[in-house]
View (cartoon, rainbow, N blue to C red):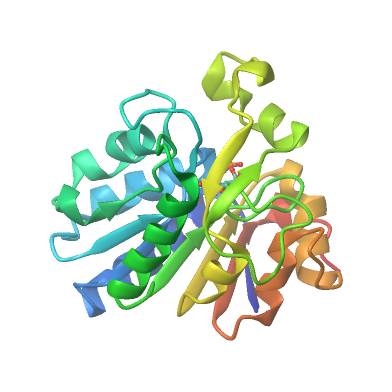
Length: 239
Ligand code: F6R
């Protein structure tokens, strides 16, 4: 695990976008693992501005709320359409987001794993981190071997994500379909981006604490090719 600190959030974001762009330029048919959330919005804006072609890329998002249709404005499919897919030349048929509206969630989860395998695995997975240490929606006590599955969201996560739901945590769906920690660790390269003081404590625990299923992001310590990119605020509790 390599920790890279930049003075400001803007610089950290720019570095992540540059690394993503460079990977796509060296491998135009890259299989990208994508994340949503506030932290990623500027990364996608920078990537769009770079003008790099995603025409041959395939993408797999980490997660989706259960019970929201892809058309719901709060779905992660809508987020991706708004921030990236509609602004680039990626082929919509090559973009994948877990199907949170599926009648059979177990089958949808297995299908997602199969599609990732059929695509040859993920070359580069982007990650954010939740204030309780989740990656994807792997909340505390997610097995480090877990695969794509249905997961209950904690009150911390529902409060953190309430902004998209009019500020009301009760309107945030209670469950999500998420890649597992094991699914994420299978990606060939991982880049986690964390910015701002609210992430400082959890970044320190994930990077310098013990590997534990209480903090899914600590599992990244086990990955041979993982960069943690932080601004000074998010790095402030690192030793
Ligand atoms: C989103 C996801 C989450 C977020 C994390 C940080 O697809 O998988 O793990 O990356 O909750 O979210 P923000 O960036 O909103 O703080």
